[in-house]
Length: 436
Image (cartoon, rainbow, N blue to C red; front, side):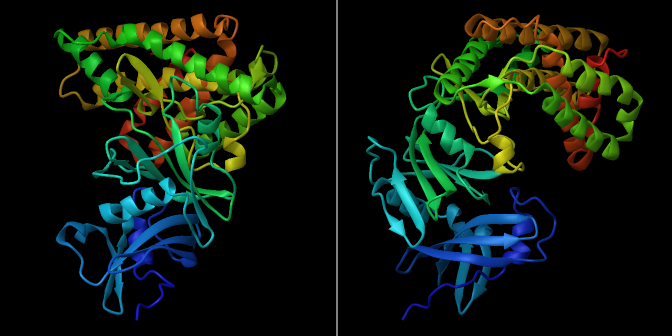
């Protein structure tokens, strides 16, 4: 007789080792929910785990005999059985995918294809998609991506909500299905796989590398960034039409900027010499500037969130900043937030080369600055041509959003990669008008 799975051994030690877990320890771990999704010699359950750092989604596989290829996925053992990360097991990933295709239900977990979507019932080959960050994504069958949200928030994840709104967009992967808990909480989704896609960050890094070395390139990326601007503007237009817009609250926006500035000043003393100038840029000037309308936006746009495939750009991952509460991520914001995110990402490409180069010459600095200038200008030109936004009139607010993003980068680098702090600190200095 098969014993029902009610807990997951080893979670307390396993969780802190995962990239998507936000802490170095997991002192308080409670398995809140266990919903079986696969039976037989290879069992699988969806576990929802409560910790001091929030709730997390851990699909768990259970086997008496574990194949050697799954050794790195082990969570713990109990009663002669091995518990392991089910997303490392192609057999269990296929089962999750098939449940979506078949509109299955297991306990309080509903697997549903989107209306009008017929998924192939067999997933085929399964492979991980890139480096695991806040979520886990797997390519199934070469045609679909199963994305599992590791952090469980109450309510619908913005990635699912905005994918539904953008189902007819040329610039977004098609939403194929979803996985929800209790009818509301998003555990995962299935979307179409973008075949042959080149990540924007890698493409930009390579392009600047060619600029620095003077070697020929196959693709003129700076020219292509105008098309990326068009794609971002088109997605903004689709979101605005579907979900509406409203006049911006200048006071509330300035207050949010200043709150995040205060948080940065607490953890990064190197920003303090610019405090007065930052308060002026993020507070007083925003309160009197033409902010325009606010609407739903991407919320965390950067070069790592876009792919170039078959001559077009595709935007990914509409969940916003994963560590922020859902209500904050779903709050309407200026489209300039996404524009600023892309401008900062292009600047980071140059910062990456500067920090990792064995030798950085005056000529390297000149070429990298020229590349960033041309890349940002091309992106802005494409965005303006499609959106009709007067970016010159919006310059004050756009600079404020760039500063807000740079301050976020300062906080992130101070906590995780102190050696990278010079990149956002340089941006802060230049954006407030300091010397370079």
